Image (cartoon, rainbow over all chains, first blue to last red; front, top):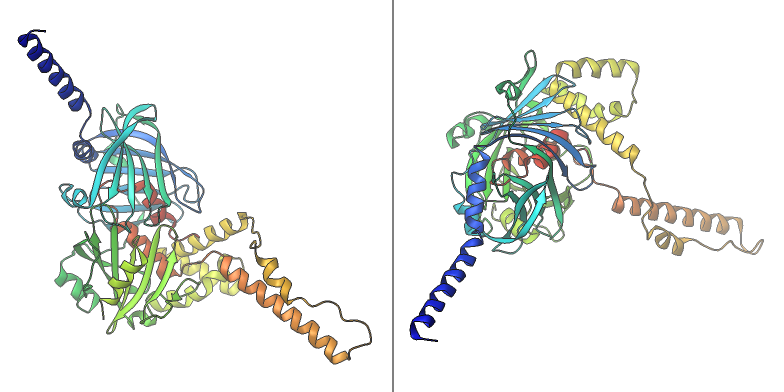
Length: 330
Length: 148
């Protein structure tokens, strides 16, 4: 083989190698495309969602850009519907003809926080709803956090299947499309509260600290500690029965959320987190924090106090981390 | 509204199970028609009752092991006094009942309080905008609140 032939062979081999490398898509790029597609695509479909302890629910879904509507067809919530208009979460209760409206936090513009805390890995391909999908696992960089595997449509980049594994390594939520059609005509009226229905606001629209302070009657307290990778995101005022609002503070690592709820101990004549039913267990060797595993394995809930404020932490994080967070209020 | 809601809240569990006097039922029904929050809680309780009714409750696997050590063999006739015999019986029965209650408390599903339901539903709402959130599953929590 002459020198020129050898060089030619090397160049061809290098081109083939680079071709094969570029053929494997970058999972980070796929995630970004999928996240962008979430607020742009229009489709209709049907999916099945499963959470532990409940019968699977079949859900009919309509999506148009930032708006979506989910009608629960089977399962314990059959007959109910949820509308997401990009700013609010509207739960339609057909029995009482009432729409419950919660303001939802603004979604992040990019995935930087998620990618700082999770490592996306393309682990293969699979068919979901008869469409070819990339299978991407989002592994947490820090222990004690939940993680996800998502299946992204190779053509539309819509996420067609989600598996969420909790901080204890158990599958806690699973949702999979069984049918999806991208040629659907979706009417704007699908995302409106039906005429004649009552509307019940579950959150106040303004979520500045000053506004929350006025509404709840005290200055919300931030914990002195948050688990690695979690950042404070926003305040909100949440309304509940008895006309006693409470403050909500949201911490997120880009994929998982820790909610901190605070209320005056004496507000409404009832202690926050008290009531009928069992659940709160005094922590062994406790320092005033009560712990309760509700919806195990979906979320851990812990109650503590900061002066005259009762604090409840909710999230799927390791018990030791939640305890540190609760103790940091003292 | 809050005072009446508080009063209603104490009665809703029984009401959802169909218990209560006709007057009490009428009072609650009237309130629930005008109060969507209590109506929603009542519906959640009814759903919980339906779920519990569908559940096939089985005793904990170690229930018998917990009871067996507390059971006493039948005493030989006329060897012990009447008081001793009845003391043994009552002690064994009390221990068995206590063991059964303890086993039930360990194995029975936890029922969250109304406030806990509100907290969890708000947590689902606050998780809603997280990238790649499983909104269908979160919506299930949001819609049915705490049915378990």
